[in-house]
Amino acid sequence: GAKKIALTLSRGGATSANTGSTLFRIQGTKDPLLASASWFYFNDLESSTSTNTYTSDIALTGTSTSHVVMDMLNRPLFAVRIIAVETTDGEHTASAVAEF
Image (cartoon, rainbow, N blue to C red):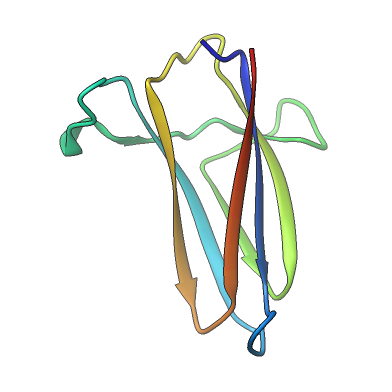
């Protein structure tokens, strides 16, 4: 499986004013059937700019981007998903790159 997953989380205002905020949370599961009860919040997101700094969610306001890393060596998962909770306005994007 993957050793590391690097996530880029962004919000912007391409089509509207962008004064709101977005809370990004990452969920994972070890269940290959992806049963709804098997998903849990991944609470060990590591900042890509400072090691040994962990968080469970990323809050972005205005037009901004954050980079976080999921260390998968000690946390094997079958799948991950990103939950974005918006307040007010803006567009949200997320991308991931896995290192094997």
